[in-house]
Image (cartoon, rainbow, N blue to C red; front, side, top):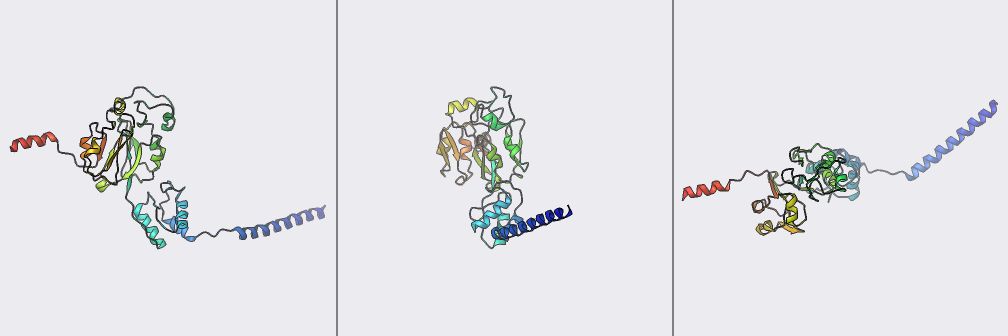
Length: 288
């Protein structure tokens, strides 16, 4: 009995040793030696793992940088130019500076501008509601207002305005990760240049319906009249499918298009208040 047990133990031990030897040689044969620079780059990244760089996470981004052999086309939106410069210095490479970007909401269809024509009583999800109907205002391109974008933001840079029913970007917290852009089923959110002194001008509408129809649903909808296109001397505005679009790469922030828009669908932010026209006329009359 004892001899049988000893034989069994010896056999199992021999099998274990043989397996360990085989596994050792297999591991040596197929082992992958990781470039130590991946860890160096990864340590410099913010560790947000937001995917804003276009990769699965910070580690994957670091691996992709080393694999690419250059920083061309690589950008960490959370770390910005500061982090990319640190990465470049660590690797002895060069990094081109990129313009700071920020998310903007391209829909001004608030509860006042685009009153509800019906009441939605379903799942609280923009993705779900978008698949069912046009929205309470009837605009097929307007913000649904169920906060998918707010829920997608990892940086608490968004909230829903209870009065307007629209999402709001907190500029100081937005890191340009693009998560809100991906979460919006209607593609209302766009990443645009922050602009000098954080000033931006853009069309707050993405409705491509004809003017008469879009105006029925929202009083600040772009009606595709083309007045903004005509007044822009810098060819920064194009009109396609009844919708104007301002190219932030060409826009000089002159603000003429804002005044020209008959439906006030072009939005300017972080500018000084304009002097009322009426007041100017009065002063001119007094001067005369």
